[in-house]
Length: 411
Ligand SMILES: *Cc1c(COP(=O)(O)O)cnc(C)c1O
Image 1 (cartoon, rainbow, N blue to C red):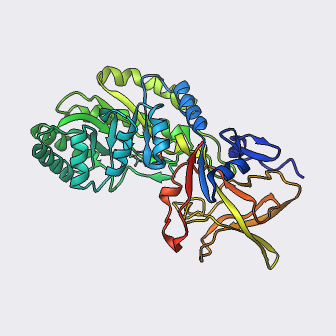
Image 2 (tube, rainbow, N blue to C red):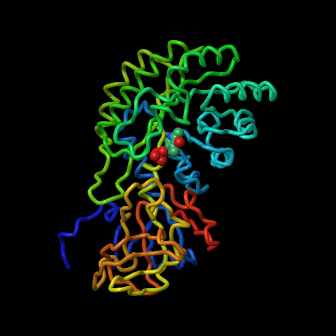
Image 3 (cartoon, protein in one colour):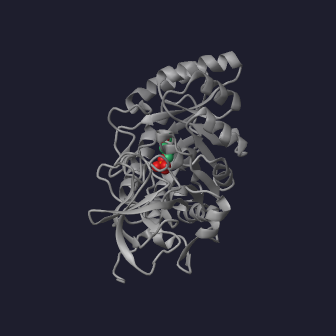
């Protein structure tokens, strides 16, 4: 067996005992028995706790951390995160209910996203959370609904910045975008917020997701602060909330390196004094989804068939893209690459081989690993996909082919 095989960062996150992966201190075999069925997602609560602690160590203490719960909206996960972070960002009315159920104070919840319905806005205003306005029309609707309820809506303006986040996996700001209000239109909107007597809190400036380059995040922070300070000149009252987005990435593929959060923290320490001088009432917020939860989660499927086709080995499992679209490579990947995958109940194994792991769907897209080296596996063995705690189950087309949904456990 070669020792030269490159170790993916993910393979060191969970301990291995007697060649079996341990999740939350439980061997995977036992955990599968405890869950009672495959496939399932398992999330390690201690890994999430550690991740928040890591950020608290590296970022200035004035920076507030919010959990963007669409990355993993499982209520038990949101409840756990609510006890660790300073706020929650929701993206729908249903997410808002889960965040409130988790005990997060309304004023520490914010609601972003285009196309909010009147019902969602009404619930949000009645709850007393901060609505991140995505357009002028949404601002007018918020004012009208607030007047109808007799409640003054709390609002922030989501700004589509006049710069792009470099090397971001998913760009969500700069150029023409469906998100936020173009920076150049914001001054006019701020005047209108004053006329409408909305309770103005500040700005939300989110420029992208899945970024592994500290330097480009640092540059975005610098430009974001400059933009916020410039826009604040037209605000109807002092900025109390300055959400500078997040976009911190995690390594999924061979060769990707962990984000240097220490460098990001140093840069923020350098930038914050000026921000605090110019916007003395502003709470600076970083909102993260993936970075908090992605590496804390695994997806586990059982091998139901092993077949050889023209010399290539296929492990057919009971899980696939209907539960885990992103691991199949069909959620935002341009060129398909394998997520880190192992046989969880025989991590090294006696023998190793190159196999493709596929699911039960009738499409060649249903691929969890394409010709990857792993321990030789048989029917009954457990395939584990790492980096699966974010954008997993709820980002997948679970109704496709009408197979049962995956289970989820927090360990
Ligand atoms: C999706 C989203 C996030 C979370 O992005 P991650 O890459 O998971 O950290 C944060 N803010 C907004 C506005 C989002 O839409």
